[in-house]
Image 1: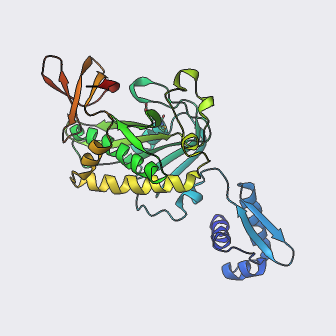
Image 2: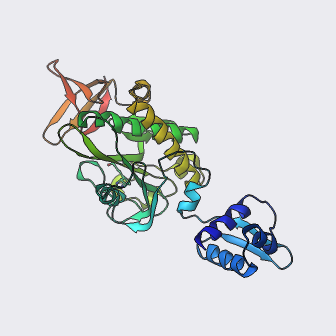
Amino acid sequence: MEDLKFNVLKVLAGEKGFVSGARLASLFGVSRTAIWKSITSLRAMGYVIEGAPREGYRLLKVPEALLPYEIRRGLKAETFGERIEYYEEVDSTNDVARELAAKGAPEGTLVIAERQTRGRGRMGREWFSPEGGLWFSVILRPRLAPGEVARLALMLGVAVARVLNAYGLRCRLKWPNDVLVRDKKICGILTEIDAEMDRVNYVIAGIGVNVNNEVGDFPEEFRDAATTMKAEIGRRVARAPLLRRLLEELEACYGRLTLGDPAVLEEWRRLSSTLGKRVRVVTQSRVLEGVALDIAEDGALLLRLEDGRVERILSGDCVHMGKI
Ligand code: BTN
């Protein structure tokens, strides 16, 4: 029944006009009643399907929800999104992904939710995740040393910026991987790692993109500092095709990075709004101020302090204080 439903959907999605119940039934070698049951259950999932007595069925609208079938339709990525765990509501997709990864879920597993009740940001902050955004996590199992994961975190920002720029936005990256448009945050990335001394077990790449959610709904303290794709482009953006492009770009950049291609870091430098600025960097243990000089090959930020010393910082949070 599950397969039949999606096979019927595939045929309807490939036709502009009506497809008769008899044709569908003979195509799949089932009764017309079985086709009618599939149509009923697709309608219950949110597909709008017109039925006309002598003509058959016609697909008018696909649901707004990020159903796995809609995500997979035409997805060109090979492993990213091959397994999809979809939730209407979840505490945090990163937490679910962690549990799955610990139980051995394969690389590329995607966990996605319409809403998160306890979305997590970097440095222990909350991440506001109402309906309308893209809140997802991908399980990665890179063959990298733990010290190289910072480079991976930068790569995630580059991949997201590339895709959003293809929608006409002009994204810049704030170290390590905040994606900004007109200096306002449109996407945040939380990279979590489970590792031993010399090897990474898994990395959870948690990505939150403000898509069709309203800036006015953000908690007041974030309103000036955040934006959404809808606010920037002036119309709603279909999320399933956007997610497909993100998965494809993430997979491509990840492949290149794990093969040691330095081009992704070069692109990070080009897209960076941090390099050359005076910044304050907050790490788990210190607060440092200085000029952001460059990023090292392993992804560390190179910061020139007041006394001329250059510090390497692998993780932390950064505030831009102005041009030098
Ligand atoms: C930040 O900029 O502070 C990082 C925000 C990361 C948010 C995403 S949304 C999907 C995934 N699940 C979470 O709980 N957090 C990340």
